[in-house]
Length: 526
Ligand SMILES: NC(=O)C1=CN([C@@H]2O[C@H](COP(=O)(O)OP(=O)(O)OC[C@H]3O[C@@H](n4cnc5c(N)ncnc54)[C@H](O)[C@@H]3O)[C@@H](O)[C@H]2O)C=CC1
Ligand SMILES: O=C(O)C(=O)COP(=O)(O)O
Image 1 (cartoon, helix red, strand yellow):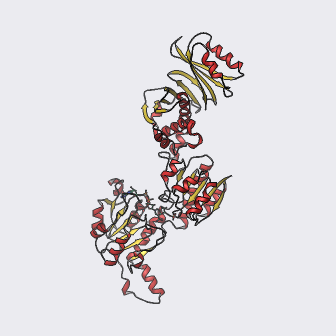
Image 2 (spheres, helix red, strand yellow):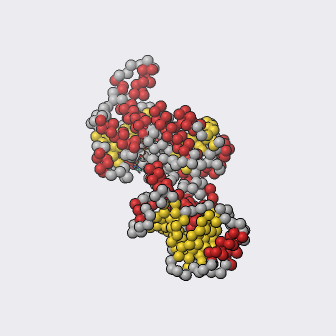
Image 3 (cartoon, rainbow, N blue to C red):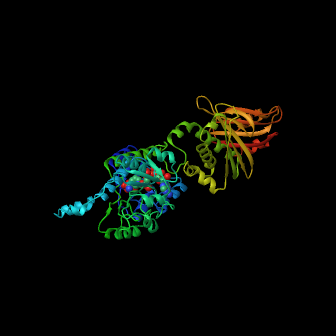
């Protein structure tokens, strides 16, 4: 039975799903050393933001197939390291959108109405109404930095509260911003004009310290900043100073450069600062959503099914996958076949989508072909996650082409491998019942289904040669399931394709090569 380690606290609904297919161990608060020591026996790891899934953890996890992040941000996971090791990383891109957006809105309102300080004061048996005069958000300008899923929901609600909206997001169109009632502007306009600035961006090299002393200096003394996205996008020291000195009106932070927050000047600022311990996603609803979403994906992957939100398999969303699945299988089979025909090191793979297949997304098909191509060398180590990287590291040049003018079957796929031992090509197609056919080998038309064990020969088309091969195999007790010859011209060169029931015994290939007229022979295992 597969084993799943859950190393941060996740909703029971997720554990229940995982338990259908695996032994689930919940071990939270493991030290980095304990995690490294524990991970080797597990097939899957499920985390939230607490566990740091470093390269060391990934290297130690030699059984790991999938890492599930019950949430959005995967910055606590070394995704490139996982990709190199062929480990899928999945998340829940939408499960906590509403929770995080509502937390940002709650932070904005608590800041503008001094709710935390007022609450504290009442609890201290005071009644200080004059000290806590707030300001309304109605008709104020909100600058939304990052107009993705969470930023969009914040914008929608803020608009309903009568706020004027500015937005900055270099990857969003002005039309989309307009739909949300936002004016798309440069960051500097937000810094100078906004009364409230809310951040909904990932932490990337571009967003690191986006709000620094220089940016803070441009803001109005009443501007309030809300950050429920990621720590590190604000220079915390500069922010604390700005709030303390009244350069800006206040700040509400849910996330920090270092979590848990250690020694920090932020704590020392007496008023106009609200701090929460990364609670954006902490609602019952969001926790159920993300746990179920990610547990289902881990379960599916452990059962050999695709995941719907893989972070490190580009272009493979479930709909595309479902539609392309038979072609992915075909691409993998052809990749495996052409690598065996090529024999040596492959330097270039040309993947050509033909006929109706040209309407399909080529990227997943290319990945599948590479997976097949590399499966001889890497066996089960290669998968959809790392096939492209492994190919790149081996210096395999990949060329994608589309040719809509070819009209065989309902679309076909041609792979051409150029390598140290020459050039080979194979073409395959799917019949109407989705059955695979190899339709061309090295330019010779054939029509055979792929088989576990196959023998391909290149020979001169002359009388008697087929019989000789047949009786030679018979002599070695090799049973032929089917045989076909493809040729371009009579008595020219031809290929013979035999499907055989068992692997070819040792030495038979050498005997075949001795048959007069045989130019080449290849045994294939698919
Ligand atoms: N506090 C919490 O508990 C939670 C925090 N988050 C975090 O909130 C952030 C936003 O999440 P979603 O809206 O779901 O992600 P999203 O991917 O839907 O949106 C992020 C947006 O940021 C934009 N962006 C990227 N680089 C940018 C830049 N340099 N300047 C401006 N915009 C930029 C992107 O174009 C995108 O539209 C993420 O960092 C996520 O990890 C998410 C959920 C809970
Ligand atoms: O989903 C995200 O990106 C979050 O930041 C939520 O983090 P959490 O799962 O609550 O530790």
